Each structure stands twice: as C-alpha cells, then as structure tokens.
Image 1 (cartoon, rainbow, N blue to C red):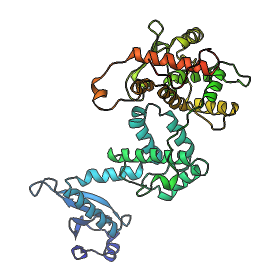
Image 2 (cartoon, one colour):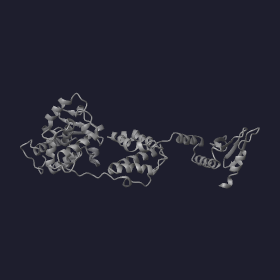
Image 3 (cartoon, rainbow, N blue to C red):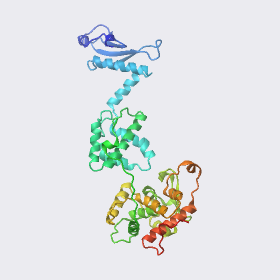
Image 4 (cartoon, rainbow, N blue to C red):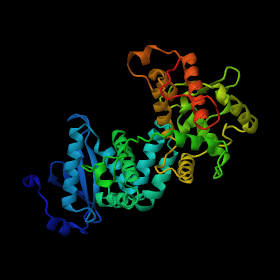
Length: 411
C-alpha cells in the first residue's frame, strides 16, 4: 500500500509556508491530496464521489499540516474509503467522530441512559440502583469517557465494594454489564470494556435463600408485630409491614406501595394492581376473618394517607428494620421480610393446602397452558387457605385456644 503514496513528510515541510500566486493540488494517492494555499498553508483533502462516476466529486478537508501528520491523514483517508465501502458518507462520519471526541459519552452517561430508557421501565423496583451507582461507581469513574475507561479502573471500583460486600459487588457488576450491553445495542456506545470478565472476577452471586421461620420464631414475630413483647420498639410502619407480609405472603413492595383503593372492605379482597405486581398481573387475595378487625383499625389510623402503612417506605428502610428486629428477638439466624413468603408457602404446603392456590396467593406466574387460558381467581379456595393460615399464626402465638396441626389438610 505504501507504493500508492507519492508524498513524504520532508516534501511537506519544504512546501509549508511557501506563498504562490494560485492554489495548487498535489496528489498523494487513493483519493488523498495536499492543497497548497496562496499564503503557504498545507491541508489534506480527500476526494470521492457519493453516487458513482457520474456524480460531482466531493472535496473533503481532513485537516491542516502539521497539526494533522501525513501518517494520520493517510489513516483517515483509509477510514473514509472503508465508510464508502459500507455506503456511509465520510462527511457525516467525521462529524460524528468529532462530536464523540469533543463530547464523549461518560460512564455516568451510559449507565443513566440504560436506567432512563430501560431499568426505570422494566424493573418494578429500581430507585435503589441509582443510590448504588452514586455511592460505588460515579464518584470514581463516572466522569471518565466510556471509551477511555480502562478495565483496571472498572475492576478497582468493584474491588472497593468486594472487600466488605462481595454479593453487592457482583450485583452491581451484572447491572453495569447489562447497561453497557443495552447501550451498544442502541448504538449509544461501541465499546465492550468487560470482555471476558465475569461476576466471579469482581464479587459473587447471591445464593438462593432457604430461610424458613420456625414456629417459635413465627410466634416471636407475630407477638412483636402486635406489641406483645417487652423488647418491642418497632415503628408502627414496620409492624404493619410485618403483619401484611406474614399474613398474605406478599412481596414487601406490594405492602409498601399498597393504597386504600386496592382494598375492598365490603367484599374483603385485597387486589394488588399490575404496576405493583412483579409478574405484571393483578393478584387477588381474600382478607381472612382473623385479620379483618386489624385492617379496620388500620383504616381508621391511615385512611387520610395515600399508603395504608401510613407513608411510603423505601426498600432499604424495610430491609434494615427487619434485620434489627431479627437481632432484637435473639434469633440465631437472621431473617428478612422476603423470608416470610417462603415461610408462608412451606407452612401451607405442610398443612396440605393446594400448591396451585398457594402459588396464586404468592403472586407467582403460572407457566404453560394453564397460565394462558385459566384466568380464574379461585377466591373461595384462596379464602379457605387464608383462614387456615391466620388461625395457625394466632394459634402458635397463643392468641387461639384451638391448636392447628401442620399436617392438617385444607378443606
């Protein structure tokens, strides 16, 4: 390819600054020429045609010598020829390149682009993501160009998190990796900085939890929620969350974001709307007799508020509150509110409840043909199971005289 080039750097230096009566052009080869101005300026020009030989030639100025070296001009010429082969106009592509260099997409730009265009729409809970990025990513590499941010700089960020929170480090890595993949698909960025890096290099995956509360622990929690414990210093908000999640086996988001318009106190049904449901479908849960008076009392306390628990709680608030309560109760193995769902499911299945109905109460998506065609809410069967569950909670906590055995069959 060097045989196509006619000019040398020595010639250009000799031509620079020489004035003449008229402008001159000297070809270098493969579309690249040097334009000599009357005042002695030297510029590199690339000549091409957009629509074949019959179209007028385009003279595209690439840059001035010596700001742009001969070697760099030739590389840019070759890039222009590649664009033409891909049916792209070099004029537009050079403007795009200049814009990228002058206004580079930063790490923060890319992550927020994903958050605004995908995560905030696709994920039911997403606010905590920004808090994580603000704390662990943006202060360190947020303002660095995504093109310039090295793998070492990325790994340094994850190493800081990994020291004390390897699972969180792994979770943030997976979110960032998804964010950058999304940006590449949308052609917002072109780089793939992580390459062969996987979650094991920066942290660890969260393991599936298997925590199920024992009868003694259930009794402790139930009494604690109703203030029947000398250690009870829980806020009203946490007590309400505990009761809702333990009774209904619901996700904490469903309880935190629940409003009184979801609760039918005539038919006694709580309907979780699609926007609060993880599976994107409404979840209808009958309100059992054993908890109705508590619901009525709660309505009297918070009916003037938008949320039934009194105010909107953040996910971290509930998580931290549950952790503290677990410690205060002296439970050897800490639990979180989500463990109530596993306790709810395990307890009801041990009692002989219909597993299909239990799955519906949990708000799990039913796969297969049944999930497509069967739209029954099964309210009667749900109500029977919910009555049995609340009776069990009251019994193991000493609120009932009638003991319910775990092997009792659901009617």
